Image (cartoon, rainbow, N blue to C red; front, side, top):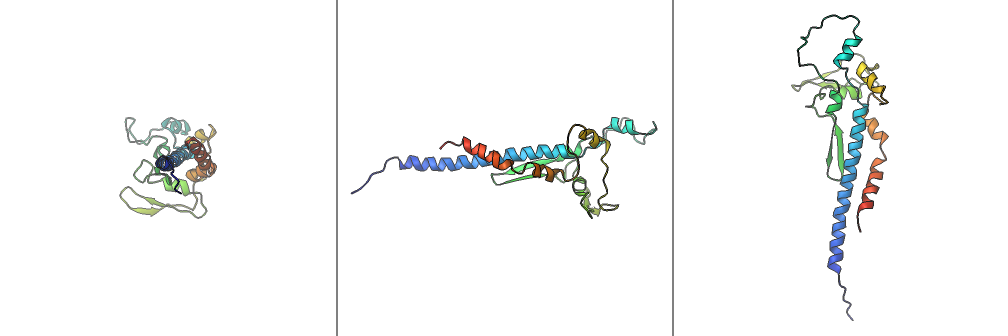
Length: 185
């Protein structure tokens, strides 16, 4: 006795299609999670003061060594602009500060400085390396730009990428569940 089953090809195509949909859902969830953590890391990063904040904080109205028309001043928020993220397929995401970015030479120092005994290596633009000077864990007071940012309710300080990840550690599971619920069986 032979049993003839019809529609097996359609069933196999449906299973293959579902695997592709699940992989795409995982990639969307990872991308959304990485973008959220990237945004929070940018909010937690310290900010350098603006020219107006520097002038307002001076004790006297003395002249500076720079010409008023100079354009080489770093703009506030260089560290925030330098924080990037990248998603590699559906398995890995990375949040980082590229070494060739605006804050690439000092981002590691700012991020890791308060660790007891830390004297991070500062990489120069030409590839040279040196240890940060001063006692370990040197920065303890936030600057004017960071204080102004904190008044807006942000948690500015060290380990800004790690704290952003810890704050949203369960987010990937939630996003993945939402995306998998969208997959049609």
